[in-house]
Length: 189
Image (cartoon, rainbow, N blue to C red; front, side):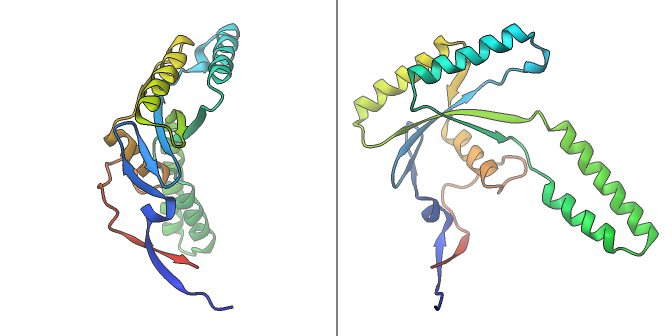
């Protein structure tokens, strides 16, 4: 079987069509994404944590279509650490080994410091609803979220772009990506 290579944009591969006034439109859905303010549960008493879990189940009971997404709000260093560990096993020079060990320790410290840097999102997916239905549903979802004690706000276009950059690992710091995808990737058909 022969494999032909076809170049395609990342946007086309993931079905991205456009940013809308509500969120993101793909070839199949329109997504509205709410950023949820995280709560540091490590400092809360068990009964408050149980209440938060109960509140979350209530939100999901009222809006069962609501999806939850958690992502790192910063870069993951696992690939870098694997590379350094491999180099450390292969390296014969003691001076270079010490530098590699120092780099590994530094990455561990950075990753530990950022281990609580998580972003939580509530996502609602629209299929083919009309604009007035979308407006009504967004208000219903937003009200259900806030009525159950969660601080959430809809992501703006620049926040959506930052989230996409973090999700796909194209930005270490979450820098804003351009509106058009100028890089091409190879898609093996």
